[in-house]
Image 1 (tube, rainbow, N blue to C red):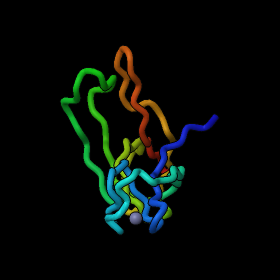
Image 2 (cartoon, helix red, strand yellow):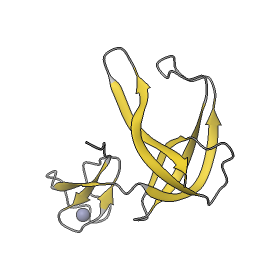
Image 3 (spheres, protein in one colour):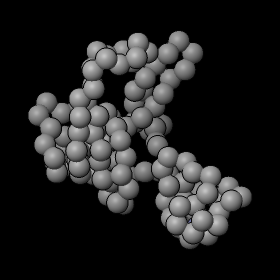
Length: 115
Ligand SMILES: [Zn+2]
């Protein structure tokens, strides 16, 4: 089964949210958790990126590059970027992978690759 990351779609106005919010940012009326989950698209455009050093020890890498990606549906998400020479505006494809692993918990997130 392919892993997915889900956005939360307001049942009243259709606005997508990611990450989860308790109140709809568009209509402001959704205070009863009336959201449907919708898988986020995987393809998008790299808006900007930054390399992070000095990560907490439960990241099993010494440094990583984070990118902000505008997905096909216009949503912006932050994910790990695995591109040898990233450029702003490049096309990227996301995969859902474990981005952080502690002894008893795994955190899944987007990892973006060129393409
Ligand atoms: Zn709404």
